[in-house]
Image 1 (cartoon, one colour):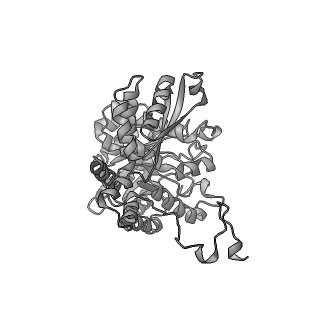
Image 2: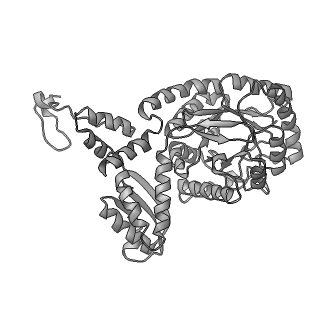
Image 3: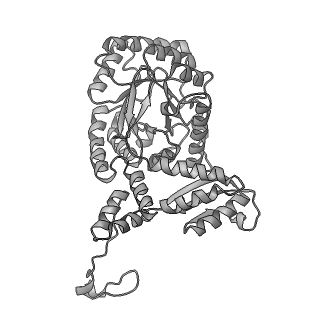
Length: 438
């Protein structure tokens, strides 16, 4: 086809010698640092670069259960600062009492909006606080420390890996392999040697349809492993997590050296929050509807991501209210726990939204059925791809079986993010541009 006959989307037909006279290209800037660098290459004024950088990204923020009057005012205030807001059609004709609202604005527009909302009625002061916190949590980069009962874990400087060791006869992946405590201990040490930043030990299978076991049986499986690991404490300097939904097992595990309790009930198990608080342990709060035996019977959601986010927000609020410090909490969207394969993939793709809560995010997709048919071992390659995708999308900690391969795969994420997302880049760049504009 003759190039002079080609038409652009605007309908114009450029002459061949002028078709790329200005080499127009859409810039693939995945961070504000990259955007600022591109602006500098135009030899723009430094102050102008700072001002324009903060205009280079729209942050959509969703709010739920906003009252009718608040939604009307939000729309007006957003338009006044140059942004916009989407709400239910019924807000316009006053036919609804509440609506979800999606705000659309740049960082700078939000900084003008928030002080105005603090002076408004209809609980808009609360909205201002939530929007400010969500925006700063989401854009935060850089290391922070999760304080465990005995050892701590630094996250945020790079994607971290949590190796999985199940001492069960019926787990979907490695069930039966490590029932012998000596074999389980050897596997823990091997995963640590391969580069695991933490180890998660499970004594009860939580696969779909799994039969529950008594706490006594669960402790019979994991107790000897924790006791044996104490002999290797000098070699094993990484935190140990125990996957349990029984408060008594959690208490005994922490006293035996565990640092983190990984609870599939989101700390809703009776007495669990009290154990975490009294023993100064860290906790992983996972989203799950029902129990492992019933969770796959109903995987329908009116709005999957909103429901998972809301559930984890309320779970962390309850933990904070009972005296558990925020720097001991981690959240997990619970892939495969009451979700279909497609729903789990949606959560994996949008895992970064959970950063708005302000807690580290752990994600476990390793060897799960959402990765494809066949044996769990045959899903290794898909699991590596899922880990890389999750890390790139914002997960801080990846719970995996194939530690060595995952560590190697994640190294490219670390190297790429070091170039595009330097520590603290987002909030620091925005703060600089905000100061310049003043």
